[in-house]
Every structure is written in structure tokens, then in C-alpha cells.
Amino acid sequence: MTPSTGGTYPPRPPTTWHVLFDDGRQQRYLPDRQAVLRYVLAVGPHTASPRFEVHAEAGRVLLADGSDGGRRFALVEVIDLARPGETERLRRELAAADE
Image 1 (spheres, rainbow, N blue to C red):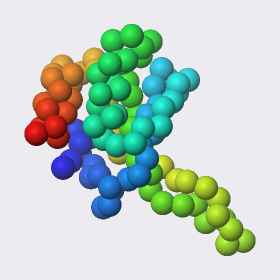
Image 2 (image 1 turned 90 degrees about the horizontal axis):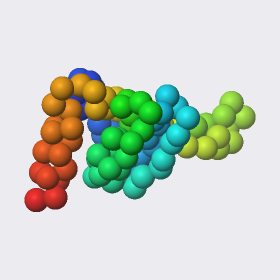
Image 3 (image 1 turned 120 degrees about the vertical axis):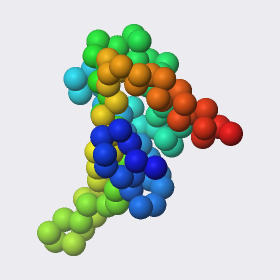
């Protein structure tokens, strides 16, 4: 599946999704894509900005000395609820995933 931004999802399902919103002032970590969709649809109408940046866990960061630097997230999609039809697209995707 390809998001509306034209990118592709990570090759393996990410274990954690990260959502940034309200111009980066708020963030949430969610367990899966369906949780992201439910969350965006639930809080979207109440946020200061209709734009949500969705990042997926993309492996670990390896520091120069070889030690573990923590988790790394890659931008997967930008959901903009102000875009015509965006809310309906998310609802359709969520309904298809629930089938």
C-alpha cells in the first residue's frame, strides 16, 4: 500500500508509529497503522493544526563507536485533514483494514 504522498511503507511492518501534530508541539507513539488512523480521526477535529506527520520505526541508530543510539523513525506520510477528501480516505482505509 502506498500513502497519498507517493512514498512506500517500510518493507517490514514497523513495531511503533510516531505521530507529530500541532506544529510539532504534540506527539504520540502508537502500536500500528490502524491505531494511527483512529487517533487522527478522533483528535483531528480538536487540534490547532489539521496536519499530522506520521513516522514509522525504521531500525536502530548505530553511533560511530558502534554503540546503540536508540530508535530511528522515518517519515511515511503527511496527513492533512484540510485536504479535500482526506477524512473520507482515512475512514475507507480503516474500514478496509478492519474487514
